[in-house]
Image (cartoon, rainbow, N blue to C red; front, side, top):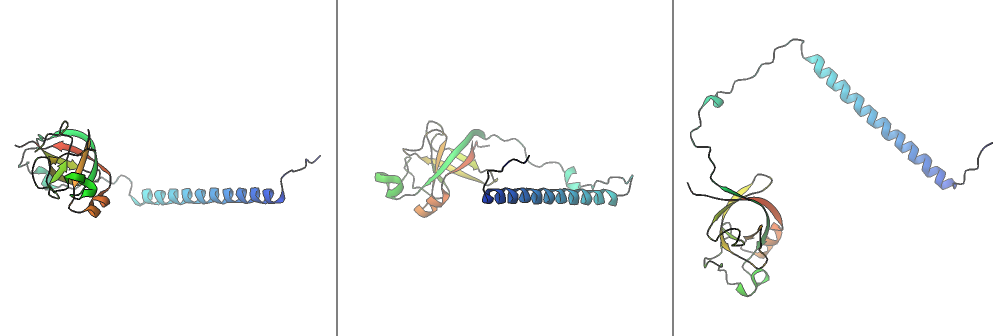
Length: 176
């Protein structure tokens, strides 16, 4: 005896469509796997059996290093980076362009730090996840700069906004 299907016609059509889509997806995946296997089998067949593996000699590896590989920089950890400008929007009543150490803030050189974590006047190397790196001098502090937080100085507010919030590894650069 056949049971009565309580689904509406639209529900049955939707279920059939979903089943058809799943079958098409499965077939597509199967075809991709077969083509990958066929391609890799052709690549294996292309190499002659018992062919020796030849490594190319790079003479540059035989040249001794001319400089020391010692790194004296002190790793501080991962820091959150934000940006600020000399205007009232970022510096409030201290918007005169001078830092807490009395220097004139300069883009590409000045950063604001928590002086309990990074002493004033210290050279700090920041290395971003992409490998980009830049050296700064800790010359300023800020009310929102606490712990592992560095504020990078920019000459204009728009550049500071574009910089946004980033993260980087920080190192204290130790002189040689």
